[in-house]
Image 1 (cartoon, rainbow, N blue to C red):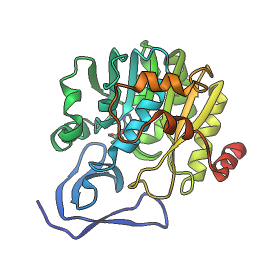
Image 2: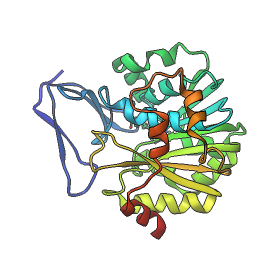
Image 3: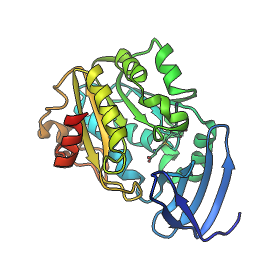
Image 4: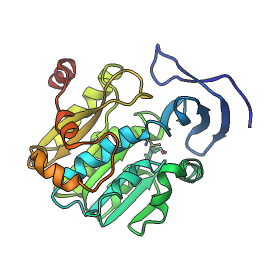
Length: 284
Ligand code: SAM
């Protein structure tokens, strides 16, 4: 272990976000990423891949709850779920809180992120590894989507940003395969970045998704370590029913699920977009 004063996120051109490191706990170059783990007094443990913050022990619940509980409470029968990416397994933890989920498959490209997170983020991901419904396969999510004959009710793409190994998860080919492997009425949720800082990436993804899916929308989550304002999660389906769902049904389906961010009211409100984001979507 080495002591350093700070690490910087360099994800967005023109911006450098610096986190004080009480300690640099780990640094490694895996087959796919440059991985580092630091401890910070506000965020606890903070994992970076290729200079981009992925997860912190303090705020992971915000992103993971919204990515999991919005589609899973909206879907009438989310028995088969697929996660692509999501190596820290915080999203899997939220998915497995739903008893209606009967199987969860996770396709992650980098075994080291899973192994590393299992060791260092057990405070939130430990239940995942003893749950019989969970299986993780180490593979490229785009290759899996192109080849699999399995079908899913809900697919969650918990990816890195559209560069490096994550770039293939933002292409029209990948989204077309997502539609192919969704069951009728199925829901796809995708990580679509921070529109204020990534307007081009946001528009490109929204344009592709709305070309490929009859129903396409997006919703918002605020995550302190994802700098730049609202983050968007794309929502795609062949059916509007789960999007227009009544709040009372969401309340009934989520009543036994322990959350710190998600509520049925937050679920409905998250689809209300600030005008600049609506305009970016309209112009896409
Ligand atoms: N859960 C995190 C959070 O709170 O934002 C975010 C990201 S998660 C660590 C992103 C994962 O996507 C990484 O573990 C990375 O290895 C994985 N990934 C990137 N490209 C991939 C691909 N083509 N197929 C499967 N997984 C991929």
